[in-house]
Image 1 (cartoon, one colour):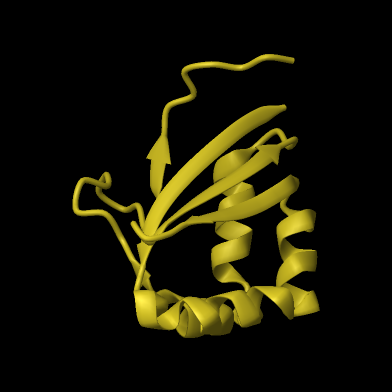
Image 2 (cartoon, rainbow, N blue to C red; image 1 turned 60 degrees about the horizontal axis):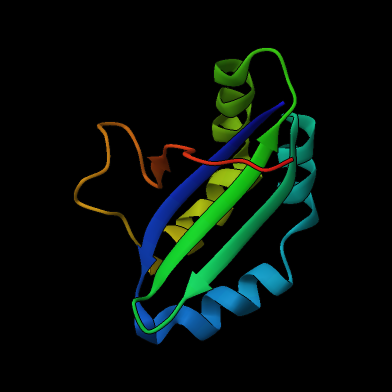
Length: 109
């Protein structure tokens, strides 16, 4: 199992919409995430900085293939088309990242 954290900004005026969307996440999107071996997926919001922190646990064997399956899913791409414009990617993110990956520096089991 691999714990993974990510961070991204969010447009302040879009926070209510983002919360509503995720309170009613599309079942097909949630099912695709689970089918790609991602569990315990959470998104946290920090205001007034308007930063979101995402966390999940990856329990699969081939992360690249599992993430590719998510990216290839038509319903997920439709979901991203709605959520993407609400998000504000960090300028410091790595090439190819939307949500910026984070280094785990502490874990207490």
